[in-house]
Image 1 (cartoon, rainbow, N blue to C red):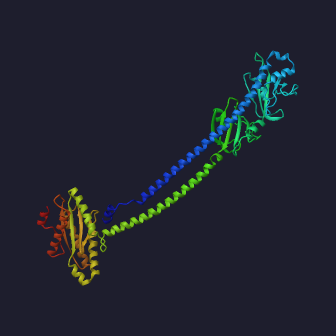
Image 2 (image 1 turned 180 degrees about the vertical axis):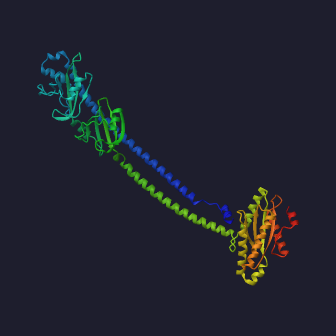
Image 3 (image 1 turned 90 degrees about the horizontal axis):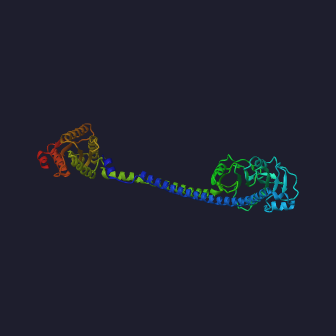
Length: 496
């Protein structure tokens, strides 16, 4: 009863709530930190997209310009080859007319014309071309079998003494009859020069891919993978499906994980630029480790401090509870003291008044206690009081019952909801038990009990109940002690 009332009157912040609040704060800061780091990562990725996109666009524009320039030279040859006047002029003049607009950049090879059998008949670099036959070459076969094929770009191959790609177009008569092809050549040195003038990061790659997925060129240059069909690689499949875009994945050639960005121009080639994710997110990862480590350290420190604080608060709470119990407990008997009795009486009185229920009170006093103290000493007297308190507490079984030391050798027992008859019966049991303790030699005194009961109303107070029980106690003593005495009839009528 005492512990329950003490806990009810004590309100404090639970250490568990403090730990929960600390956990929420740590989690909140972690979420904010994670959000900031994620935003930083997205910013780095966006910057990489922009950088690689601009790089791909720049390379694509350069390649498109030169392919278009070379294709114009091929178109000029195709257009003039079908002119009837070309047969009647001299060879030098024909050479001038056909190859006057031929691209002459140092990375471009000679433009050559073949007949229907694949034999080279004209060469922009000489009036007397060397005997050559391209019948078995794919760039010849494709135009021979497909009249509608436009500009064809070959796989990387050895041509005119160096490696590069062949660009070719079909020559046809006015009725569509196949007359041969015109073929030009772009050396690999052209692509090497593009890569050399760019400032690339470690593990950056530049790939030029044909529309069917064949790798035409790669920087850094690797002859073993040039000409390989990459059409089944996921990133290349996306590049073949969309005009521009990006893809993050492992490279099919070296296994390095990269961000690939591509830009497709109007020519039959796709320029794809890749950068290692280690380079893109390298600085971010360092900062994330630093920030994450700092947050983890701060979180651990905060948790440790909160645990220490919670433990100290727990100890302080236990101490406060102990002090509260001591403040409400009689030090000798362990029962509630007078202060606690007053608190419980006021609370139970208000509760009984709301419920219109009876509340009983027993006032108990040791008989001839002063004489006993004088004869046997205070220590023996204390043992007597402890025996009486033990018996009273043993009979206060209900949670609402409150046994208290009222003062000196006087005790009180509050019995909410109990009728006067039941209170008298309980008082008798306590009196008889204390008497048995006397016969067993544990005490040498008896007790007198005064019993009172009231149903609280607006005309009565708790002091009336205490006064009635006290009067009944004095009546018990006046009538010979060692008995339980109810409140006198006239007192009952006065209280009513």
